[in-house]
Image 1 (cartoon, rainbow, N blue to C red):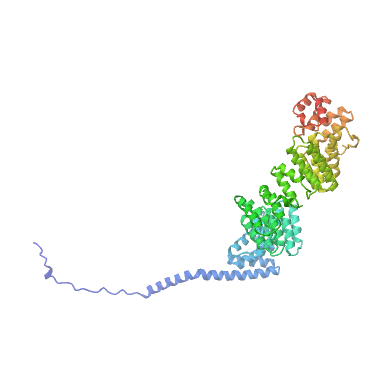
Image 2 (cartoon, rainbow, N blue to C red):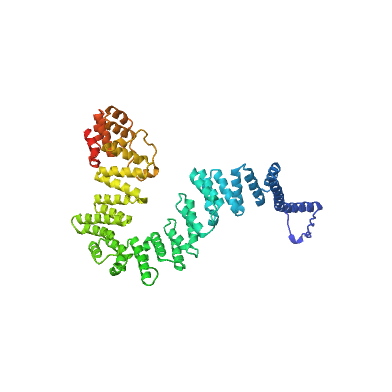
Length: 587
């Protein structure tokens, strides 16, 4: 049986609307509570933060009042409370800093709080100094230096800043420098350009980079003034190794626009610019000559002297007419020296022997001597001229000409004449006496002139009586020469040296054992020689002359093998005749 489905004959079910959903009161309450919770959640953080900050600031004010009243326990309590409620609030951080500063209980924490405050807002000048001092006190001198270097120029040279730098130096072990800087910090200087210049020049040659940098910045600030001192500042800056190319260009503009401009100052800036921009050297040189020729800025001798200093002798000789130089006391030496530097000896001789030179006869003779040494086969004429120039310079009292004569004599290989010039210069006294006596000693040593060596050694000790180096040298020479032996006192050999003498002489200390052994030799006490020589030790570091004497004394003391070992390594060409005599005893 099959089922026959006829859709048309079936009764359709009428469509019905679904019943509307009803929202109950409970559901509404749940939804409202959820929304309220969200609102409270998002609003709570700022409200709570503001409340905490307000409470923290209130505690901070209480702490500040307690600190002022020196109520320490209450200050500790309120400071801790302020930090607990609002550790990142500026007012709270400041009271923390004040508490740590006053109590001195936690320098590292104080530095941390100051660093933290600097992230919120710039530190005041007082806070910067406090940070620097705190870092220095905790041994972080590099960080303390960074703080100092960031100070503005007007701040870095005042008392608190100098005291900060003094603290840094003291922490680094530079006690003397720190003491000097602290003394300067307490010294009251007027805030005048002259006083600022004085301090800047004191700091210019400081051994500390910070002070040299501050000096440079101060000089730059002074150079920008409209007063005459600006030109002095510019001159000092042109010789400052910290000068940059951009600053040199600025200085050139300053000089050109200044009411007190001077050609030598400008030329000094150009020299600095050429040093900083060597690829522009030729352009700058030609530009300065052209600029001078097209205007009336400065005197010709200023430009001529500058070209000579820059070794631009060809340009100089082309610029200055010979006829003009022959009449000028200022130009004549510059042109004569330029001809010498260029090797134009015949022209120089003609210039010197024509007319009446506007310079001293001693100076003319020195130039003629140098020219003669190149134009004639022997040095007889040069020697005669230089000897005459020394006599003339002594009569004139001219130290400069004596020094020039010594320099030329040594240059053209006339050591005897050079020695005479140095001795004459030393006899003038003053600052040149010491270097001229040292040069005399050097020349006499090269000439093996024992008499002059003894004389200069005596003069050097008279000039520096506290110098153990000079005392040893004189005693050694007296003993090997056998002269003035009665004046040699070895009972209390000096063990400390005049430090200035140590750095300006070539000979080292003479071993006390060698001096005593020489004294024993002169007294005929041969047994004592060996005993004293035993105190010398290794002789390899001694000068050849002293080694030769040791070898000879060892031979006399019955140590021929040891004496020969030393003697065979001594170059005899470097010895004085008296030292050579000792060396022969060991061979």
